[in-house]
Length: 248
Image (tube, rainbow, N blue to C red; front, side, top):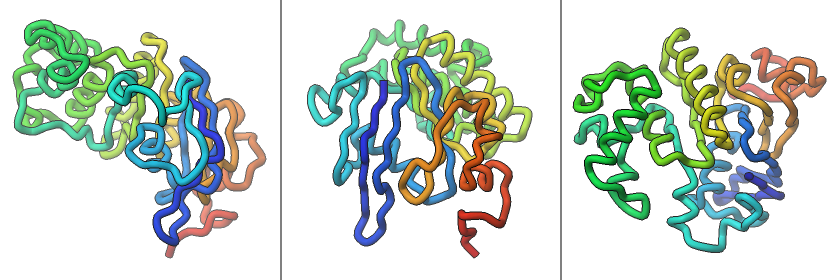
């Protein structure tokens, strides 16, 4: 479903991606791990077309993303942002139905509300939450609303950006379970970036280790602990010593 081939991106003298290549089969869940500033977020932005690579190709379902109708292209994606990123001036249900109230996916007002309430129910929130404002919700509830918004338009591909950041371990576990259930239920292709190794083990089919702008290791999550790769081992076990230099 997603194929990146030899992607390069630099900002001035800063080389962020230096030949990143990845393949994400349809209906699978890939988690990208790596230290801060290694290019994980830029990789997602390149796929979405928010950042243009300097070289390399990106294909979605076999088609080059630089060609075709951009609105139709973006309609295939859902996104759970770090920190939920809800609009505080509109009620929860309108946040969830944001894409269904405008643009190419526009639905009638009442239908959009019904879909929003159903998606809220799917992430474990009751209908009365629909008319509340984001500021009235806890951090965990806001994250669930963000997840409901990500799946509201039944996307084929869902991106999760640090889905458990700022949550306590119990709520992080709830979010991880929801993500895994929903991705399997929808048959969606998922790509997640995270530092949380508990999330990795909960939601990944495949893991990719990104460092210095290249994929150092990729493979099934079940093989991660015995990979023999020094970069991956140092990262997943949090060792100070190893090929990854800690910024002091």
